Image (cartoon, rainbow over all chains, first blue to last red; front, side):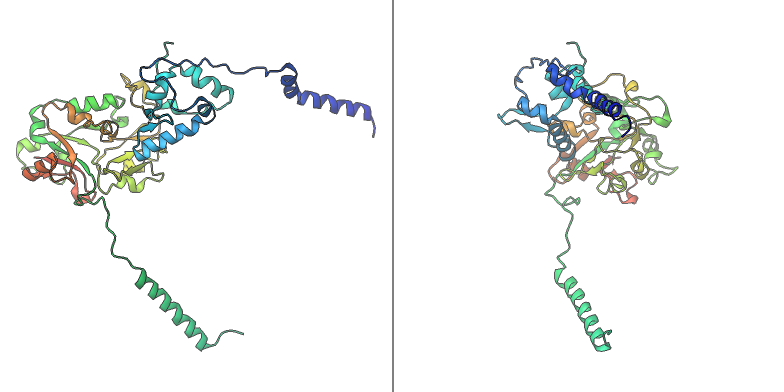
Length: 132
Length: 255
């Protein structure tokens, strides 16, 4: 092979650059940027816990919302009973956003970061005015 | 080697017998539609509109105003793109089959409050390619699912009553005062009256029925012989819009 040294060096430099995002975040112990949403929970009387545990909401809120949407619109079932026995009205604008009234922080921050910004809930559902 | 004539006839005969036998033995007694009007077990919501009471208050638009306010119906201000759920129509336009030149003046001149007829056999449901509009089994309301609507407007063409409106543009700038409890619509979906399904679950009457200063609107289950609406329909002469089309509309007009 002609110029083997240069080629191998070139390949090595390329590999280091191409994988840099991975080892950089490993080396520094953190990613360059992580969203840090300020999760405000408004004190709504009678509502001191979320409809589901936080872990579940973090991983599966989209499933819950999808399920709520289908059961409310298609089957007319508007009541949700949480595992701890509380009863809630299945409503994005009127239940979720009643407590988490800061959409820009609560929804948009992570959704923009994860590039799932194409959710079109808010084209129709009315977001609360943010005075927080 | 092919099959001979005897074998062919045997197979053909057996096939015919099996097919015939199957259809004879598996035929069940004719099934009936449980939501058919007349069956008294299933709830069927309907509305009676007293045109005599309604025409006493000329120029009143309380029903339209409250409905459009709570459902975030935009006021585009342009007849071609207007969006409406409930409104007044003159008699001839609302009842083309019942109208003639020599009709008594107070009927001829009385405007009819028109809205979605929540038909028993709704043509809009038949033409919808995405099932975003359907008739609810539990009470017969013709519902809309805005999440599914692709804006093809087949239902607008299918509805013989003009009850459906299309959002040709984003309605939000045209809503004077947004009601945060109810969603708005987006550009490119069809909308119409939903008999206040969101109020019914809370045990409330439709907003138009509640607000009417003349108490001209009666709402109830017509499959219940004891209901107020059934008593009214029994005692008063009622007409319906374009009944000849066979859609079996569920808005009754008392004349």
